[in-house]
Image (cartoon, chains in turn blue, green):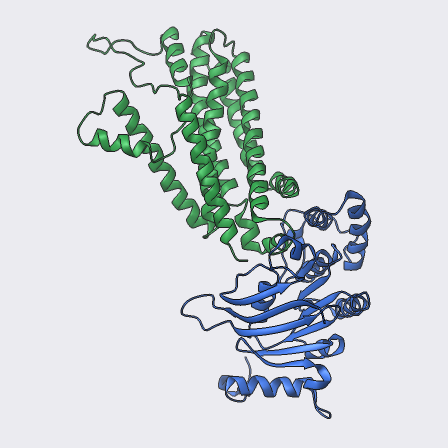
Length: 258
Length: 280
């Protein structure tokens, strides 16, 4: 069985006084499959995807991406990465950003002139002439997805890809993932939206406090009669040492709202 | 690498602050350039030339310094701070290529600014009837000014890759002023104006630790024109003879230029290391 990504005992701490953001995470992502990474805020999901993308250095452990070390030129040629909160050089236009990134990917002029209009159309940004500094968060997120698929990657890493998207945008991302899966692309999907992950993923890993709490195929992790949300909440609360029901702040219940 | 340089140049051309700076500088130089033709008091071409050469130097130097800060503080920092670097660094381009691309774009912008200022200065000197002096000194003076600013720009780029760019600018400014002060003190030691021991020896050692400000032959030329126009005195009020060239620094030699180039390479290497170490 070939793996697109394999991590072994991955560790990361940002400051000496901080707890480990990633604490001994070992994952195997099969080629051509959709892998969902789930976890509450601060579970270490983004740190893991950034280490896989070669943007953040691990403190310990090993990573292999598409048969190479992360950050290696060969690995990066095969990766498409849509970050959680994408941003771009703010004085450029969407077409220019894609042309810039297309050149960095080594695409020929012919390829760029073919792929860029199609990508912009898919992003819903065809005909958009404004500079990036005038874009909304949703528009940037759509462009972030566009630049991630521009190089036709073997491994697509999506970090909270639908956070700022409207329902149509979410549907487009779902269709993209399904389409890529059919074409043999490996997808690493990092999301809070459990229902979305459940619909498209072959395998999921649930993280809590930097550790893997559960990993496997959806039907292995979710027993019959229960939902992914039930399992997720149970595992996360157990890892955190108690239930998450914090109630509302007491002042919210005092008298009438002003 | 060329993609990084190409789109950095495009970005810089759209930055209103830089465009405004260039516009103000050009307007100010043109006003200064035509002032001697309008304002009474400048009777001969050589008097007008003396005024122009002595004022242009300060205006152009100030403008290049401000532009240096505007470029050095933002050219890499903006990518790192906004998160744009995430999309770039995940592509198959090395950090070295990225750094070289950014540096090349910076160099091109500085070269263009220098070319515009040189052409403008020479044109205004000709309009003012300035003949009989060394135009090469005007050109090399602008080149030396740009070369000196380049050191500051690379230093700011490196600092802004590891810290907030305002803090980097403050540190860069202080360091740059210290460099300038050491060069000035060394000129005094070289002229035998400052001979006190052990300060002269300390300054001589410090001089080889800081980048040498490159100096053209323009200061010498300005004094020469000043003497020819009668605007520079050759005696004191008491009638004692003075040497007007005594305080004029000697033009930089090949050794100074090589030292400057080595310093630029060292700062460039530090910039690369700062970009390479950076996690985004």
